[in-house]
Length: 331
Image 1 (cartoon, rainbow, N blue to C red):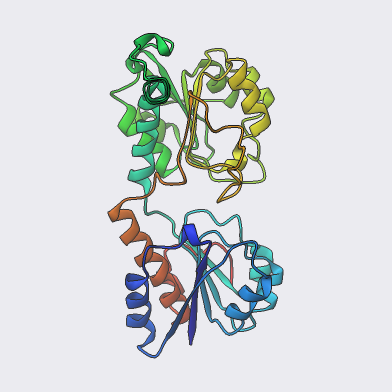
Image 2: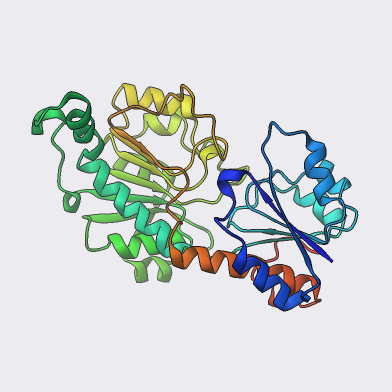
């Protein structure tokens, strides 16, 4: 039996000791565990050759399409060491009887912590002051515009799942009020318990001083933040994207930043993961902070992620599907 661990080099775990130990503890010491650092400029045949005899694939950001699956006749399960699985062709996987298992939760606390960090850093113009100090050697508090206190501002949250709720709990004593986009999966009791007000997207755009995106990516919310959305943002908010890069129309965002509709932008994700950074129009701006998909990154989250994604493979391959943390297709 063979498990292939493969991803873009910058997305692979620093080491694979915990993953390997967990896999072998559940599947036997004779299990073959191969690791492939794959880049998009490599021939596809390199990946196809590595996966051709694999029973399981553990990845986070490889495109798992029909072509890849057709080269993996033994493949039974794709374990995603991420909460998102938009890079997997679910229809193709289901048709071939391949289970798709993302990690349902491992970094809720970490990502919501990142949301609060972004909110304060952008409101306090940290990057603008750092630029002025380090590039211009100037000591000038007027180098950036004055801003209101966070406690006087309204926070809007798009995506009121586990991470959105955790962000709301953290922010409850920090901001004036919290609006959330109404979610059909939530009840009024959920909103009351969290101390938030559910509204339609248009009202959230119009009344928020800070907007945080925690949504999962779907066909329905692709380019959720577009020119129309930005045109409604009367309070010139800070926008923080901790969902997926495709949630935002970047051309429209750049225009909104340049005309002041959006006063600052923070992102842990951009188009592509990893994105093409050379000459990227969102970089080198004093009111934009971008991190390389790191808000989840902590010692606790890493250990949890590696353990659950490996256990999902063990449970699936040993016929214990009921123990898989999250199985998103019917196989």
